[in-house]
Length: 321
Image 1 (spheres, one colour):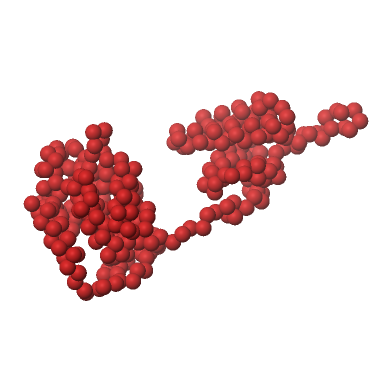
Image 2 (cartoon, rainbow, N blue to C red):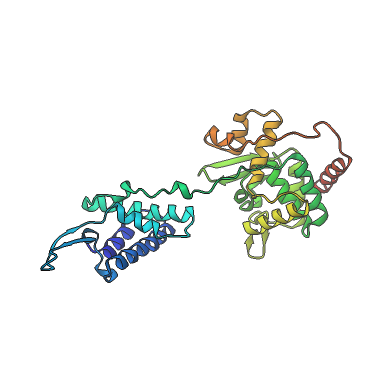
């Protein structure tokens, strides 16, 4: 084996991962090397994993034997990271795990990661259950959008698409006009998260509103459906709009991805089979889809609310101009 810095360099050069991943591994492994340097009280260039423990003759001071790094050192390293979040610990463990697998394969170096006793699960944050938006919440959201939006047609079209298709926000923001089939009423998403080209059917009548929107903004076939001067509308902008409209509508703050969960839940409450919802969400695994369906109480079901009726009529008239 080489000294630690050279082995880190060799590991990074031979790793078959993305450049971002390599950069993360390099940063984490250098931090680990600095920890061992301080522990051994030697320059970082002299740190060698096979010589972490030194057995010397207490009389003559002569070095009798060197022992390699073990899991106790790794436990000590993780314990030294006070204030680190659960995700930061997972990234550290990922880098060290990949590095020691490399050493095991390259030099048959005993992999100490397998014997780590540090309890990562104790640091795992308690996951709060997601709360989807009820039908009433969605109507209040659009009431607020219609009355408060500073870019009415864009915001209305954007959030109608988000709520009505169940698409991922990234899929909506990457849409270009040529991907929309106004005649047959569907959107070709191209390659999505699954790596496959997929098609989403638009709710009947919405293609008229989309066509009106594209003409209103004079979009060409290669233009993004939602854009600013610098390109496609950033995710942060949409997240900010969503947060603002929720706040103005007096709805508890929520993650933007909840719109996809809301889409699934409302379909399920309307009696759609879980396999149909799976196809609409384009999930590979039905269990993933089940996790998107949350139980809500369907309030005021079948009761007409005049304000909601007026809003619906306004939306239809605006999108049909």
